[in-house]
Image (cartoon, rainbow, N blue to C red; front, side):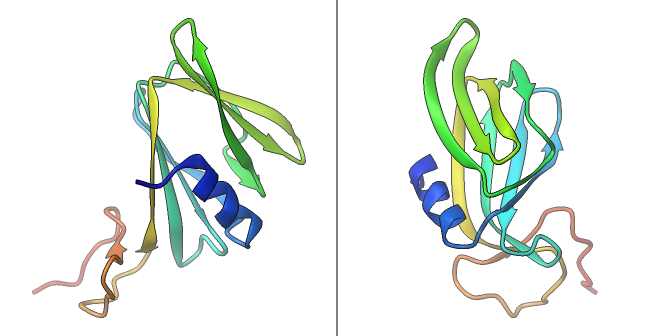
Length: 122
């Protein structure tokens, strides 16, 4: 399973554009890539979110777990714009190419099409 350290290594190597993809009141999904127009390489899913203090779009963030808080665990996000925080029960990290458009069946192992993409299937 991937970790925040893995995300930080990818961010330092060029996967440095991150944004909120969705938030349903409990689960917050952040995605990261070199170019979010066509695909993303990283998904961070924060579960049972209690507090969010961060921009919805970030360049070059560094992620760190800060430990237990009153209502969950603290996750720090450092950017050139400042220090931010998310408090949630947990975070899971997925690393792999997720396309933002329909590529048909032209996928390599470990690649997928984003859930929100309308597929051209007969």
